Length: 611
Image 1 (cartoon, rainbow, N blue to C red):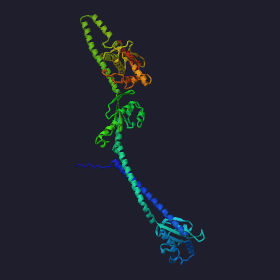
Image 2 (cartoon, rainbow, N blue to C red; image 1 turned 30 degrees about the horizontal axis):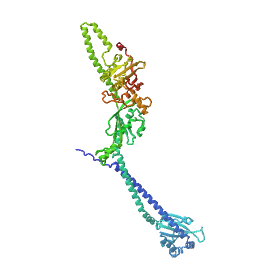
Image 3 (cartoon, rainbow, N blue to C red; image 1 turned 90 degrees about the vertical axis):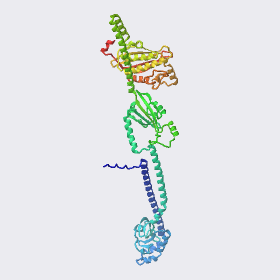
Protein backbone atom coordinates (compact mmCIF):
# COMPACT_ATOMS: atom_id res chain seq x y z
CA UNK A 1 0.00 0.00 0.00
CA UNK A 2 1.49 3.28 -1.08
CA UNK A 3 1.79 5.99 1.48
CA UNK A 4 0.57 9.38 0.46
CA UNK A 5 3.25 12.05 0.46
CA UNK A 6 2.79 14.68 3.12
CA UNK A 7 1.33 17.92 1.89
CA UNK A 8 3.72 20.82 1.87
CA UNK A 9 2.68 23.72 4.04
CA UNK A 10 2.75 26.99 2.15
CA UNK A 11 4.60 29.67 4.07
CA UNK A 12 4.34 33.34 3.27
CA UNK A 13 7.47 34.89 1.85
CA UNK A 14 9.95 36.97 3.77
CA UNK A 15 8.46 40.25 2.58
CA UNK A 16 4.95 39.12 3.53
CA UNK A 17 6.12 38.00 6.97
CA UNK A 18 7.97 41.26 7.49
CA UNK A 19 4.88 43.22 6.40
CA UNK A 20 2.58 41.30 8.75
CA UNK A 21 5.00 41.65 11.64
CA UNK A 22 5.44 45.37 11.05
CA UNK A 23 1.70 45.88 10.70
CA UNK A 24 1.17 44.01 13.96
CA UNK A 25 3.77 46.14 15.72
CA UNK A 26 2.32 49.35 14.28
CA UNK A 27 -1.23 48.33 15.22
CA UNK A 28 -0.13 47.45 18.76
CA UNK A 29 1.72 50.74 19.16
CA UNK A 30 -1.23 52.70 17.79
CA UNK A 31 -3.65 50.84 20.09
CA UNK A 32 -1.49 51.42 23.15
CA UNK A 33 -1.06 55.07 22.20
CA UNK A 34 -4.81 55.46 21.78
CA UNK A 35 -5.51 53.81 25.14
CA UNK A 36 -2.95 55.98 26.92
CA UNK A 37 -4.25 59.09 25.21
CA UNK A 38 -7.85 58.19 26.13
CA UNK A 39 -6.88 57.51 29.73
CA UNK A 40 -5.02 60.81 29.99
CA UNK A 41 -8.02 62.59 28.49
CA UNK A 42 -10.33 60.92 31.00
CA UNK A 43 -8.04 61.94 33.85
CA UNK A 44 -7.95 65.52 32.56
CA UNK A 45 -11.75 65.66 32.31
CA UNK A 46 -12.03 64.20 35.84
CA UNK A 47 -9.64 66.82 37.19
CA UNK A 48 -11.62 69.54 35.47
CA UNK A 49 -14.86 68.16 37.00
CA UNK A 50 -13.26 68.12 40.45
CA UNK A 51 -12.09 71.71 40.01
CA UNK A 52 -15.56 72.74 38.88
CA UNK A 53 -17.16 70.97 41.87
CA UNK A 54 -14.68 72.68 44.19
CA UNK A 55 -15.52 76.10 42.77
CA UNK A 56 -19.28 75.53 43.19
CA UNK A 57 -18.82 74.14 46.71
CA UNK A 58 -16.73 77.13 47.74
CA UNK A 59 -19.36 79.51 46.39
CA UNK A 60 -22.18 77.76 48.26
CA UNK A 61 -20.19 77.46 51.49
CA UNK A 62 -19.33 81.16 51.39
CA UNK A 63 -22.96 82.20 50.98
CA UNK A 64 -24.26 84.12 54.02
CA UNK A 65 -27.65 82.42 53.86
CA UNK A 66 -26.03 79.00 53.90
CA UNK A 67 -23.75 79.86 56.82
CA UNK A 68 -26.64 81.33 58.82
CA UNK A 69 -28.97 78.46 58.03
CA UNK A 70 -26.44 75.77 58.96
CA UNK A 71 -25.49 77.65 62.12
CA UNK A 72 -29.16 77.93 63.07
CA UNK A 73 -29.54 74.17 62.89
CA UNK A 74 -26.33 73.42 64.78
CA UNK A 75 -28.19 72.82 68.05
CA UNK A 76 -31.49 71.63 66.54
CA UNK A 77 -33.30 68.65 67.94
CA UNK A 78 -34.62 65.60 66.09
CA UNK A 79 -37.93 67.30 65.38
CA UNK A 80 -36.24 70.15 63.52
CA UNK A 81 -34.00 67.68 61.60
CA UNK A 82 -36.89 65.62 60.29
CA UNK A 83 -37.03 65.15 56.51
CA UNK A 84 -40.40 66.93 56.20
CA UNK A 85 -39.18 69.95 58.14
CA UNK A 86 -35.90 70.20 56.27
CA UNK A 87 -37.65 69.90 52.89
CA UNK A 88 -39.63 73.02 53.80
CA UNK A 89 -36.58 74.83 55.10
CA UNK A 90 -34.58 77.50 53.27
CA UNK A 91 -31.45 75.39 52.57
CA UNK A 92 -33.13 72.75 50.41
CA UNK A 93 -34.50 75.16 47.78
CA UNK A 94 -31.24 77.11 47.73
CA UNK A 95 -29.14 73.95 47.13
CA UNK A 96 -31.49 72.66 44.43
CA UNK A 97 -31.37 75.98 42.66
CA UNK A 98 -27.58 75.87 42.57
CA UNK A 99 -27.62 72.22 41.36
CA UNK A 100 -29.97 73.00 38.50
CA UNK A 101 -28.06 76.07 37.42
CA UNK A 102 -24.61 74.36 37.48
CA UNK A 103 -25.70 70.96 36.13
CA UNK A 104 -24.24 69.20 39.14
CA UNK A 105 -25.32 65.71 40.14
CA UNK A 106 -25.92 66.88 43.69
CA UNK A 107 -25.40 69.79 46.06
CA UNK A 108 -25.55 68.51 49.65
CA UNK A 109 -25.31 70.64 52.80
CA UNK A 110 -24.69 68.90 56.15
CA UNK A 111 -24.35 69.96 59.74
CA UNK A 112 -21.31 69.32 61.93
CA UNK A 113 -22.52 65.76 62.53
CA UNK A 114 -22.72 64.87 58.86
CA UNK A 115 -26.53 64.91 58.70
CA UNK A 116 -27.99 66.02 55.37
CA UNK A 117 -29.67 69.42 55.47
CA UNK A 118 -30.22 69.38 51.67
CA UNK A 119 -30.24 66.61 49.08
CA UNK A 120 -31.74 65.98 45.61
CA UNK A 121 -33.70 63.10 47.15
CA UNK A 122 -35.91 64.62 49.92
CA UNK A 123 -36.35 61.20 51.54
CA UNK A 124 -32.68 61.20 52.50
CA UNK A 125 -32.80 64.51 54.36
CA UNK A 126 -31.81 64.29 58.02
CA UNK A 127 -29.77 61.13 57.40
CA UNK A 128 -26.00 60.82 57.63
CA UNK A 129 -24.07 61.12 54.36
CA UNK A 130 -22.77 57.89 52.74
CA UNK A 131 -19.17 59.12 52.46
CA UNK A 132 -16.78 60.23 55.16
CA UNK A 133 -17.20 63.99 55.95
CA UNK A 134 -14.50 64.10 58.63
CA UNK A 135 -11.84 65.92 56.59
CA UNK A 136 -14.17 68.71 55.52
CA UNK A 137 -15.53 69.01 59.08
CA UNK A 138 -11.93 69.32 60.22
CA UNK A 139 -11.58 72.48 58.11
CA UNK A 140 -9.88 70.96 54.99
CA UNK A 141 -11.13 71.10 51.42
CA UNK A 142 -11.30 67.72 49.66
CA UNK A 143 -11.63 66.71 45.98
CA UNK A 144 -12.15 63.05 45.18
CA UNK A 145 -13.86 60.62 42.78
CA UNK A 146 -15.90 58.03 44.61
CA UNK A 147 -19.20 56.13 44.75
CA UNK A 148 -22.19 57.62 46.54
CA UNK A 149 -25.94 57.09 46.82
CA UNK A 150 -26.46 58.77 43.43
CA UNK A 151 -23.64 56.87 41.69
CA UNK A 152 -20.00 57.49 40.89
CA UNK A 153 -19.01 61.14 40.71
CA UNK A 154 -16.20 63.64 40.91
CA UNK A 155 -16.94 65.63 44.06
CA UNK A 156 -15.57 68.37 46.28
CA UNK A 157 -16.17 68.89 50.01
CA UNK A 158 -15.75 72.34 51.57
CA UNK A 159 -16.24 73.29 55.27
CA UNK A 160 -19.00 75.76 56.27
CA UNK A 161 -17.98 78.26 58.92
CA UNK A 162 -20.23 79.99 61.42
CA UNK A 163 -21.23 83.55 60.56
CA UNK A 164 -18.52 85.99 61.56
CA UNK A 165 -16.01 83.20 62.22
CA UNK A 166 -13.20 81.71 60.14
CA UNK A 167 -12.34 78.82 62.42
CA UNK A 168 -15.56 77.33 63.77
CA UNK A 169 -16.88 74.64 61.39
CA UNK A 170 -20.63 74.14 61.64
CA UNK A 171 -21.08 71.93 58.59
CA UNK A 172 -19.96 71.15 55.08
CA UNK A 173 -20.99 71.55 51.44
CA UNK A 174 -20.51 68.59 49.09
CA UNK A 175 -20.91 69.13 45.32
CA UNK A 176 -20.55 66.35 42.77
CA UNK A 177 -20.61 65.93 38.95
CA UNK A 178 -21.55 62.54 37.53
CA UNK A 179 -18.83 60.36 35.97
CA UNK A 180 -21.23 59.72 33.13
CA UNK A 181 -20.89 63.38 32.18
CA UNK A 182 -17.11 62.89 32.16
CA UNK A 183 -17.46 59.90 29.85
CA UNK A 184 -19.73 61.89 27.58
CA UNK A 185 -17.04 64.55 27.40
CA UNK A 186 -14.52 61.84 26.57
CA UNK A 187 -16.80 60.67 23.77
CA UNK A 188 -16.35 64.02 22.08
CA UNK A 189 -12.58 63.40 21.99
CA UNK A 190 -12.86 59.85 20.66
CA UNK A 191 -13.24 60.95 17.04
CA UNK A 192 -9.93 62.90 16.94
CA UNK A 193 -8.25 59.99 18.75
CA UNK A 194 -9.67 57.49 16.26
CA UNK A 195 -8.68 59.64 13.28
CA UNK A 196 -5.17 60.05 14.65
CA UNK A 197 -4.84 56.32 15.27
CA UNK A 198 -6.16 55.50 11.79
CA UNK A 199 -3.73 57.98 10.22
CA UNK A 200 -0.81 56.54 12.16
CA UNK A 201 -1.84 53.01 11.18
CA UNK A 202 -2.10 54.05 7.52
CA UNK A 203 1.33 55.70 7.56
CA UNK A 204 2.77 52.62 9.29
CA UNK A 205 1.24 50.40 6.62
CA UNK A 206 2.71 52.48 3.81
CA UNK A 207 6.10 52.54 5.52
CA UNK A 208 5.96 48.77 6.00
CA UNK A 209 5.09 48.23 2.32
CA UNK A 210 7.94 50.49 1.21
CA UNK A 211 10.39 48.83 3.58
CA UNK A 212 9.30 45.37 2.42
CA UNK A 213 9.82 46.28 -1.25
CA UNK A 214 13.20 47.82 -0.48
CA UNK A 215 14.33 44.76 1.45
CA UNK A 216 13.21 42.55 -1.40
CA UNK A 217 15.14 44.67 -3.86
CA UNK A 218 18.27 44.73 -1.69
CA UNK A 219 18.18 40.96 -1.21
CA UNK A 220 17.50 40.32 -4.91
CA UNK A 221 14.26 38.60 -4.03
CA UNK A 222 16.00 36.00 -1.87
CA UNK A 223 14.48 34.65 1.32
CA UNK A 224 16.54 34.72 4.56
CA UNK A 225 16.97 30.94 4.41
CA UNK A 226 18.31 31.24 0.88
CA UNK A 227 20.66 34.06 1.90
CA UNK A 228 21.99 31.96 4.80
CA UNK A 229 22.48 28.98 2.47
CA UNK A 230 24.25 31.15 -0.10
CA UNK A 231 26.51 32.59 2.59
CA UNK A 232 27.45 29.12 3.78
CA UNK A 233 28.03 27.92 0.22
CA UNK A 234 30.11 30.99 -0.56
CA UNK A 235 32.28 30.47 2.51
CA UNK A 236 32.76 26.81 1.64
CA UNK A 237 33.63 27.61 -1.98
CA UNK A 238 35.98 30.48 -1.12
CA UNK A 239 37.86 28.28 1.34
CA UNK A 240 37.84 25.21 -0.89
CA UNK A 241 38.94 26.57 -4.27
CA UNK A 242 42.59 26.68 -5.24
CA UNK A 243 42.14 30.09 -6.85
CA UNK A 244 42.22 33.53 -5.30
CA UNK A 245 38.89 35.37 -5.34
CA UNK A 246 38.52 39.11 -4.75
CA UNK A 247 35.09 40.77 -4.80
CA UNK A 248 34.86 44.53 -5.32
CA UNK A 249 31.63 46.51 -4.92
CA UNK A 250 30.42 49.16 -7.35
CA UNK A 251 31.95 51.89 -5.16
CA UNK A 252 35.31 50.04 -5.29
CA UNK A 253 35.29 48.60 -1.79
CA UNK A 254 36.55 45.08 -1.21
CA UNK A 255 33.70 42.76 -0.22
CA UNK A 256 35.36 39.34 -0.61
CA UNK A 257 39.01 38.37 -0.14
CA UNK A 258 39.67 34.67 0.43
CA UNK A 259 42.74 33.08 1.99
CA UNK A 260 44.17 31.89 -1.32
CA UNK A 261 44.16 35.44 -2.69
CA UNK A 262 46.12 36.62 0.36
CA UNK A 263 48.60 33.78 -0.08
CA UNK A 264 49.13 34.45 -3.78
CA UNK A 265 49.64 38.19 -3.17
CA UNK A 266 52.07 37.55 -0.32
CA UNK A 267 49.82 39.01 2.41
CA UNK A 268 49.47 37.93 6.01
CA UNK A 269 46.49 35.59 6.34
CA UNK A 270 45.32 37.46 9.46
CA UNK A 271 45.20 40.80 7.65
CA UNK A 272 41.65 42.16 7.45
CA UNK A 273 41.03 43.43 3.92
CA UNK A 274 37.24 43.28 3.56
CA UNK A 275 35.65 46.72 3.77
CA UNK A 276 38.72 48.71 2.69
CA UNK A 277 38.71 50.86 -0.46
CA UNK A 278 40.60 49.23 -3.31
CA UNK A 279 43.25 51.96 -3.42
CA UNK A 280 44.02 51.52 0.31
CA UNK A 281 44.26 47.73 0.40
CA UNK A 282 47.98 47.53 -0.58
CA UNK A 283 47.15 45.73 -3.82
CA UNK A 284 49.21 46.03 -7.02
CA UNK A 285 48.42 49.26 -8.92
CA UNK A 286 47.49 47.24 -11.99
CA UNK A 287 44.28 46.05 -10.29
CA UNK A 288 42.60 49.43 -10.77
CA UNK A 289 43.42 49.34 -14.48
CA UNK A 290 41.99 45.82 -14.67
CA UNK A 291 38.68 47.02 -13.22
CA UNK A 292 38.55 49.98 -15.60
CA UNK A 293 38.80 47.63 -18.58
CA UNK A 294 36.65 44.85 -17.12
CA UNK A 295 33.56 43.56 -18.90
CA UNK A 296 31.39 40.48 -18.29
CA UNK A 297 33.63 38.66 -20.86
CA UNK A 298 37.06 40.10 -20.03
CA UNK A 299 40.03 37.96 -21.14
CA UNK A 300 42.74 36.72 -18.80
CA UNK A 301 45.88 38.77 -18.15
CA UNK A 302 49.25 37.42 -17.04
CA UNK A 303 51.23 39.47 -14.52
CA UNK A 304 54.23 38.99 -12.29
CA UNK A 305 53.23 39.87 -8.72
CA UNK A 306 55.98 39.55 -6.16
CA UNK A 307 57.71 36.23 -6.73
CA UNK A 308 54.77 34.65 -8.56
CA UNK A 309 53.46 34.63 -12.09
CA UNK A 310 49.69 35.08 -11.81
CA UNK A 311 46.87 34.85 -14.31
CA UNK A 312 44.29 37.52 -13.48
CA UNK A 313 40.72 37.67 -14.68
CA UNK A 314 38.58 40.72 -13.85
CA UNK A 315 34.89 40.41 -14.72
CA UNK A 316 32.13 42.97 -14.27
CA UNK A 317 29.10 41.53 -12.46
CA UNK A 318 25.58 42.68 -13.36
CA UNK A 319 22.07 41.41 -12.48
CA UNK A 320 20.66 38.74 -14.74
CA UNK A 321 18.68 39.89 -17.77
CA UNK A 322 17.13 36.45 -18.35
CA UNK A 323 13.63 35.46 -17.20
CA UNK A 324 13.55 33.00 -14.34
CA UNK A 325 16.87 34.15 -12.90
CA UNK A 326 17.41 36.03 -9.67
CA UNK A 327 17.69 39.75 -10.30
CA UNK A 328 15.77 39.62 -13.59
CA UNK A 329 14.07 42.93 -14.31
CA UNK A 330 11.59 42.75 -17.17
CA UNK A 331 11.20 46.52 -17.43
CA UNK A 332 14.85 47.04 -18.42
CA UNK A 333 14.85 47.70 -22.16
CA UNK A 334 17.68 46.65 -24.46
CA UNK A 335 19.08 50.16 -24.81
CA UNK A 336 19.02 50.64 -21.04
CA UNK A 337 20.84 47.36 -20.52
CA UNK A 338 23.48 48.38 -23.05
CA UNK A 339 23.94 51.74 -21.34
CA UNK A 340 24.29 50.05 -17.96
CA UNK A 341 26.88 47.62 -19.29
CA UNK A 342 28.88 50.53 -20.63
CA UNK A 343 28.82 52.24 -17.23
CA UNK A 344 30.01 50.97 -13.87
CA UNK A 345 28.57 47.52 -13.03
CA UNK A 346 25.61 47.45 -10.70
CA UNK A 347 26.98 44.70 -8.49
CA UNK A 348 30.74 45.35 -8.83
CA UNK A 349 33.60 43.17 -10.05
CA UNK A 350 35.15 39.77 -9.38
CA UNK A 351 38.91 39.25 -9.75
CA UNK A 352 40.16 35.68 -10.08
CA UNK A 353 43.82 34.87 -9.40
CA UNK A 354 45.46 31.66 -10.59
CA UNK A 355 49.04 30.74 -9.82
CA UNK A 356 51.11 30.00 -12.90
CA UNK A 357 54.42 29.84 -11.08
CA UNK A 358 54.41 26.05 -10.87
CA UNK A 359 53.41 25.83 -14.51
CA UNK A 360 56.26 28.15 -15.39
CA UNK A 361 58.60 25.94 -13.40
CA UNK A 362 57.40 22.88 -15.29
CA UNK A 363 57.73 24.78 -18.56
CA UNK A 364 61.33 25.69 -17.75
CA UNK A 365 62.04 22.11 -16.81
CA UNK A 366 60.52 20.86 -20.06
CA UNK A 367 62.55 23.41 -22.00
CA UNK A 368 65.73 22.15 -20.39
CA UNK A 369 64.74 18.53 -20.94
CA UNK A 370 63.77 19.27 -24.53
CA UNK A 371 67.09 20.97 -25.17
CA UNK A 372 68.97 18.05 -23.63
CA UNK A 373 66.91 15.56 -25.61
CA UNK A 374 67.62 17.35 -28.86
CA UNK A 375 71.31 17.54 -28.03
CA UNK A 376 71.48 13.87 -27.08
CA UNK A 377 69.66 12.84 -30.26
CA UNK A 378 72.12 14.84 -32.35
CA UNK A 379 75.04 13.48 -30.35
CA UNK A 380 73.83 9.91 -30.84
CA UNK A 381 73.65 10.44 -34.58
CA UNK A 382 77.04 12.12 -34.68
CA UNK A 383 78.62 9.47 -32.45
CA UNK A 384 77.34 6.75 -34.75
CA UNK A 385 78.91 8.44 -37.78
CA UNK A 386 82.19 8.97 -35.99
CA UNK A 387 82.29 5.45 -34.65
CA UNK A 388 81.73 4.16 -38.19
CA UNK A 389 84.61 6.32 -39.38
CA UNK A 390 86.95 5.10 -36.62
CA UNK A 391 85.85 1.51 -37.24
CA UNK A 392 86.57 1.89 -40.96
CA UNK A 393 90.04 3.38 -40.38
CA UNK A 394 90.92 0.62 -37.96
CA UNK A 395 89.53 -1.96 -40.38
CA UNK A 396 91.87 -0.88 -43.17
CA UNK A 397 94.79 -0.69 -40.76
CA UNK A 398 95.27 3.11 -40.94
CA UNK A 399 95.96 3.51 -37.24
CA UNK A 400 97.66 6.88 -37.59
CA UNK A 401 94.62 8.36 -39.32
CA UNK A 402 92.32 6.90 -36.67
CA UNK A 403 94.50 8.42 -33.91
CA UNK A 404 94.50 11.84 -35.56
CA UNK A 405 90.74 11.64 -36.07
CA UNK A 406 90.18 10.82 -32.36
CA UNK A 407 92.42 13.73 -31.35
CA UNK A 408 90.38 16.09 -33.45
CA UNK A 409 87.18 14.83 -31.85
CA UNK A 410 88.63 15.37 -28.35
CA UNK A 411 89.49 18.97 -29.23
CA UNK A 412 86.20 19.98 -30.86
CA UNK A 413 83.88 18.17 -28.44
CA UNK A 414 81.21 15.59 -29.06
CA UNK A 415 79.07 17.77 -31.30
CA UNK A 416 79.72 20.86 -33.39
CA UNK A 417 77.18 23.49 -32.29
CA UNK A 418 77.08 26.86 -34.04
CA UNK A 419 78.20 28.44 -30.74
CA UNK A 420 81.76 29.69 -30.99
CA UNK A 421 84.19 28.39 -28.35
CA UNK A 422 81.57 26.00 -26.96
CA UNK A 423 84.43 23.79 -25.76
CA UNK A 424 84.79 26.19 -22.81
CA UNK A 425 81.52 24.83 -21.44
CA UNK A 426 82.28 21.75 -19.36
CA UNK A 427 78.81 21.22 -17.92
CA UNK A 428 76.40 19.02 -19.95
CA UNK A 429 73.39 21.19 -19.10
CA UNK A 430 75.15 24.34 -20.28
CA UNK A 431 76.50 22.60 -23.38
CA UNK A 432 73.12 21.30 -24.43
CA UNK A 433 71.08 24.40 -23.55
CA UNK A 434 73.41 27.06 -24.92
CA UNK A 435 74.11 24.83 -27.93
CA UNK A 436 70.36 24.63 -28.65
CA UNK A 437 70.08 28.41 -28.25
CA UNK A 438 72.96 28.86 -30.70
CA UNK A 439 71.02 26.84 -33.26
CA UNK A 440 67.99 29.11 -32.84
CA UNK A 441 70.20 32.19 -33.04
CA UNK A 442 71.94 30.90 -36.19
CA UNK A 443 68.55 30.40 -37.86
CA UNK A 444 67.90 34.12 -37.35
CA UNK A 445 71.31 35.18 -38.61
CA UNK A 446 72.90 35.81 -35.20
CA UNK A 447 76.16 34.28 -34.07
CA UNK A 448 76.13 33.12 -30.46
CA UNK A 449 79.59 32.89 -28.98
CA UNK A 450 81.06 31.99 -25.63
CA UNK A 451 83.22 34.69 -24.01
CA UNK A 452 86.92 33.97 -23.79
CA UNK A 453 86.96 34.47 -20.00
CA UNK A 454 84.42 31.68 -19.49
CA UNK A 455 85.49 29.22 -16.80
CA UNK A 456 83.20 26.48 -15.55
CA UNK A 457 84.91 24.12 -13.13
CA UNK A 458 81.91 22.74 -11.24
CA UNK A 459 78.55 21.28 -12.21
CA UNK A 460 75.14 22.92 -12.39
CA UNK A 461 72.93 21.88 -9.46
CA UNK A 462 69.74 23.76 -10.37
CA UNK A 463 69.40 23.65 -14.15
CA UNK A 464 65.82 25.01 -14.06
CA UNK A 465 66.64 28.44 -12.62
CA UNK A 466 69.94 28.64 -14.51
CA UNK A 467 68.39 27.84 -17.89
CA UNK A 468 65.51 30.26 -17.21
CA UNK A 469 67.82 33.20 -16.51
CA UNK A 470 70.32 32.34 -19.27
CA UNK A 471 67.54 31.62 -21.76
CA UNK A 472 65.73 34.93 -21.10
CA UNK A 473 68.93 36.97 -21.37
CA UNK A 474 70.06 35.16 -24.54
CA UNK A 475 66.62 35.55 -26.15
CA UNK A 476 66.67 39.28 -25.41
CA UNK A 477 70.22 39.59 -26.73
CA UNK A 478 69.36 37.73 -29.96
CA UNK A 479 66.27 39.86 -30.43
CA UNK A 480 68.27 43.05 -29.86
CA UNK A 481 70.90 41.90 -32.38
CA UNK A 482 68.25 41.12 -35.01
CA UNK A 483 66.64 44.56 -34.68
CA UNK A 484 69.92 46.43 -34.29
CA UNK A 485 71.51 48.54 -37.03
CA UNK A 486 74.86 46.73 -36.85
CA UNK A 487 75.32 44.49 -39.89
CA UNK A 488 77.40 42.04 -37.85
CA UNK A 489 74.90 40.36 -35.62
CA UNK A 490 76.22 38.57 -32.57
CA UNK A 491 75.45 37.75 -28.98
CA UNK A 492 78.05 36.76 -26.41
CA UNK A 493 77.68 34.79 -23.19
CA UNK A 494 80.37 34.65 -20.57
CA UNK A 495 80.08 32.41 -17.50
CA UNK A 496 82.22 32.01 -14.40
CA UNK A 497 81.59 29.78 -11.42
CA UNK A 498 82.73 30.71 -7.92
CA UNK A 499 83.02 27.56 -5.82
CA UNK A 500 82.57 28.01 -2.07
CA UNK A 501 81.96 25.72 0.89
CA UNK A 502 78.35 26.89 1.27
CA UNK A 503 77.53 26.39 -2.41
CA UNK A 504 78.88 27.87 -5.56
CA UNK A 505 77.82 31.08 -7.30
CA UNK A 506 77.36 31.31 -11.07
CA UNK A 507 78.25 34.68 -12.61
CA UNK A 508 76.80 35.47 -16.00
CA UNK A 509 77.41 38.28 -18.52
CA UNK A 510 75.40 38.61 -21.74
CA UNK A 511 76.19 41.21 -24.43
CA UNK A 512 74.94 41.79 -27.97
CA UNK A 513 75.45 43.86 -31.10
CA UNK A 514 72.14 45.72 -30.83
CA UNK A 515 71.50 49.44 -30.40
CA UNK A 516 71.50 49.31 -26.59
CA UNK A 517 69.24 51.06 -24.08
CA UNK A 518 70.42 54.65 -24.53
CA UNK A 519 67.05 55.77 -25.96
CA UNK A 520 65.23 54.19 -23.01
CA UNK A 521 67.51 56.04 -20.58
CA UNK A 522 66.78 59.35 -22.33
CA UNK A 523 63.01 58.75 -22.21
CA UNK A 524 63.21 57.87 -18.53
CA UNK A 525 65.10 61.05 -17.68
CA UNK A 526 62.72 63.15 -19.81
CA UNK A 527 59.66 61.66 -18.11
CA UNK A 528 61.30 61.92 -14.66
CA UNK A 529 60.00 58.44 -13.79
CA UNK A 530 63.28 56.63 -13.30
CA UNK A 531 63.15 56.51 -9.53
CA UNK A 532 66.95 55.83 -9.40
CA UNK A 533 68.53 53.78 -12.17
CA UNK A 534 67.08 54.71 -15.59
CA UNK A 535 66.89 51.01 -16.48
CA UNK A 536 64.63 49.86 -13.64
CA UNK A 537 61.59 50.14 -15.93
CA UNK A 538 62.63 47.10 -17.97
CA UNK A 539 62.42 44.98 -14.80
CA UNK A 540 58.76 45.84 -14.16
CA UNK A 541 56.10 43.38 -15.26
CA UNK A 542 54.42 44.16 -18.56
CA UNK A 543 57.18 46.49 -19.81
CA UNK A 544 58.84 45.43 -23.07
CA UNK A 545 61.09 47.11 -25.60
CA UNK A 546 60.82 44.21 -28.06
CA UNK A 547 59.70 44.96 -31.60
CA UNK A 548 57.45 41.97 -32.07
CA UNK A 549 56.22 42.70 -35.57
CA UNK A 550 57.50 39.91 -37.76
CA UNK A 551 59.57 38.56 -34.86
CA UNK A 552 59.37 34.78 -34.72
CA UNK A 553 61.34 34.51 -31.48
CA UNK A 554 58.79 35.07 -28.73
CA UNK A 555 59.82 35.23 -25.09
CA UNK A 556 58.92 31.87 -23.57
CA UNK A 557 57.41 33.66 -20.56
CA UNK A 558 55.49 36.27 -22.55
CA UNK A 559 56.61 39.69 -23.71
CA UNK A 560 57.49 41.90 -20.75
CA UNK A 561 57.81 39.05 -18.21
CA UNK A 562 61.21 37.49 -18.94
CA UNK A 563 63.43 40.07 -17.22
CA UNK A 564 61.16 40.55 -14.15
CA UNK A 565 60.93 36.79 -13.71
CA UNK A 566 64.69 36.35 -14.10
CA UNK A 567 65.42 39.05 -11.52
CA UNK A 568 62.92 37.58 -9.06
CA UNK A 569 64.42 34.10 -9.43
CA UNK A 570 67.90 35.52 -8.82
CA UNK A 571 66.86 37.67 -5.84
CA UNK A 572 64.99 34.77 -4.30
CA UNK A 573 68.39 33.03 -4.15
CA UNK A 574 70.14 36.12 -2.81
CA UNK A 575 71.50 37.16 -6.21
CA UNK A 576 70.42 39.73 -8.77
CA UNK A 577 70.09 40.65 -12.44
CA UNK A 578 71.11 44.14 -13.55
CA UNK A 579 72.21 46.29 -16.49
CA UNK A 580 75.99 46.80 -16.48
CA UNK A 581 76.23 48.96 -19.63
CA UNK A 582 73.52 50.64 -21.69
CA UNK A 583 75.34 50.34 -25.04
CA UNK A 584 75.06 52.77 -27.92
CA UNK A 585 73.26 53.00 -31.29
CA UNK A 586 75.09 50.98 -33.93
CA UNK A 587 76.56 48.65 -31.32
CA UNK A 588 77.80 47.25 -29.16
CA UNK A 589 74.54 46.94 -27.30
CA UNK A 590 73.52 46.58 -23.68
CA UNK A 591 75.36 44.32 -21.25
CA UNK A 592 73.35 42.38 -18.67
CA UNK A 593 74.87 40.70 -15.64
CA UNK A 594 73.45 38.07 -13.34
CA UNK A 595 74.59 36.42 -10.12
CA UNK A 596 72.96 33.12 -9.14
CA UNK A 597 74.06 31.77 -5.73
CA UNK A 598 73.54 28.11 -4.92
CA UNK A 599 73.38 26.91 -8.51
CA UNK A 600 76.82 25.22 -8.91
CA UNK A 601 78.84 22.75 -6.87
CA UNK A 602 82.23 21.05 -7.23
CA UNK A 603 82.27 18.01 -9.48
CA UNK A 604 82.24 14.53 -8.02
CA UNK A 605 85.51 12.59 -8.10
CA UNK A 606 84.10 10.26 -10.76
CA UNK A 607 83.55 13.18 -13.10
CA UNK A 608 87.14 14.42 -13.06
CA UNK A 609 88.21 12.13 -15.92
CA UNK A 610 86.23 14.32 -18.32
CA UNK A 611 88.56 17.27 -17.74
